[in-house]
Length: 206
Ligand SMILES: O=C(O)CCC(=O)C(=O)O
Ligand SMILES: [Mn+2]
Image (cartoon, rainbow, N blue to C red; front, side, top):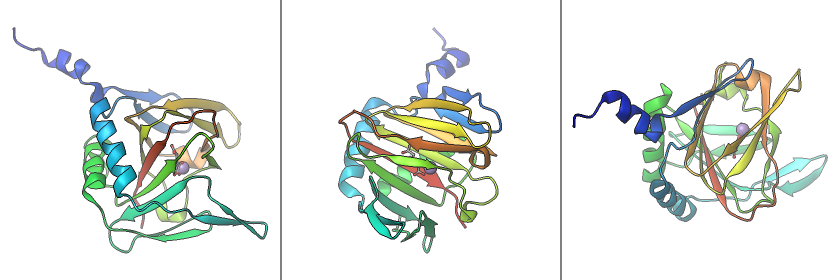
């Protein structure tokens, strides 16, 4: 039987994009962008090959460990400043280039850097913020890939306080662009889960 192009499109999980219906934003979620076996392979390689660091932040004169491990990779000399932390890019490694090229095929953008977060368990988190540093330009494009433990990704509108949450599952790809960072904050709250999660937020920085 001849295969029909429409059927193969529907069967291809990678192409199932959901546009998240929220005002003053442009958010697309590909829930099953990477399949189970690819995701497992990427998770193992990332845990093993990434140079994970415990960064510290200062707050009212005291310093604290960031509640997760992080790493910063990118094109040469991409220095990134966020939350009072300054990081110099490490050179791309094969696993990051492979993930980057896969998401670029649906994102209409070439990313030049990636911030990785490793949530060792549910006690690791990231608090409310927007990815809106000047270095990310007028309308930041953030390509966020998740492997391992699913975690809740919360969104809160800066002025109306409207809220929404999404589950970022193993192998998902969340693309945020346009005015999203101008108008919305996001966080990964602490949770009761035990499992480990790795998140990669690909970025375009100047
Ligand atoms: O882990 C996530 O899904 C979000 C990470 C994040 O917001 C960030 O690195 O800026
Ligand atoms: Mn963020």
